Image: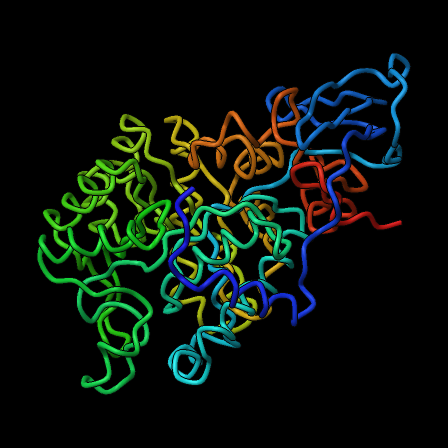
Amino acid sequence: MVTSRGLPRSVLALALALAGLGSGPSLAEELTIHAGRVLDVRGGGYLKDQAVVVKEGRIVAIEPWSEKRAGPEVVDLTRLTVLPGLIDAHTHLLSRNRAMEDYASGLVTKSLSYRTLEGAANARATLMAGFTTVRDVESEGAGFADAALRDAIADGLVPGPRMQVATRGIAAVGYYFPQDVAPEFAAILTGAQMVSGTEEMRRAVREQIRGGADLIKLYVDFRDPGGRKMHATLTLDEIRTAVEEAHRAGRRVAAHAVTPEGVRNAVAAGVDSIEHGHMVDFEALKLMAVRRIALVPTAAVLFDWIAEDPKSAAVAQPRIDNLRKAIAEARRLGVRIVCGSDPALLNEHGKNARELSALTRLGLTPLEAIRAATLEAAALMELQDQVGSVEVGKRADLIAVQGDPVQDVEVLGRVLFVMKDGQVYRHDP
């Protein structure tokens, strides 16, 4: 993993220690989980009364409890359902505003150190919600602090999910938040790195990689300043340049794309995932299927808009209606659908499971929604040999809930047990 250039590790470690966010529990050499049942996310069935043996952070055995060999430590989850740790492929852990209208003031009033501590708090909330891995798709004006947070978690300085980070998102000049500041301050108060032309794009991608990016995030469409019509912004050549440069360095490209034209441009340029894709058309879906480009619908935010402000239905409902049709077509074509909850506001972190509910409202079965947050997300992140299922040899990322998530996905919003890399972070009585 690339070493972070965001914050000095000594400074970050001291800040986290002072905040009371020290390292998680010590790693047990070996322990056995006595599971009432274990969900096989591939087949969709349950293994009942199982012993899941964990050693040095890995699953080393899964066997009927009656055949369990003696072990030094047992975790009793006999009344619970055990699943693999969940994955959120679209987060913004460095963003903690009270509302999007507060975006500009957050950039002005919060120091980078404070925002990094906010990120640590968001990371902990995410982990405690049962999401043990995330793809963080840009730092929202916090520079390379997401890379520092990723490294701090990996080093055990702060509890949080395993992270892949995009550092600064890349957008066309003028087409990202905040758009309500005076022009002379636009280059200073910005949530993304602004570019114009292919060479500026090439440099921006290289700068993200230099800063520790695991992937590159592009905003290929956006609304006009003043909230007018949304349209494609980056040119096809600019997107192709980003993809070429990122792929050369072994990084994948995630494209924020809402409009039909934006999605088509991103797909034609060869990105690896479409983020949102709310107005995607069927022709683009066909090409996504051929090129194995994933769709990360981030549907929960649409339902949230309507619940919080019914007037927003004029914008959100057409997107919901189109997504419902698009997801049905994506299932038919075999397009990978991946869970991404897009948490960016104060009250959204740790509520990542709301995306699973949203996906079922759009037509996925509960099992398909679970796969979107396990197998499919792991494949998108190229971690399929490490996480995403409860299998021997994989990392011991395990969660447990009461009830049957295959029948009622809502139970995943009430996680009672969380283990990551063999460490128990949560075990409610």
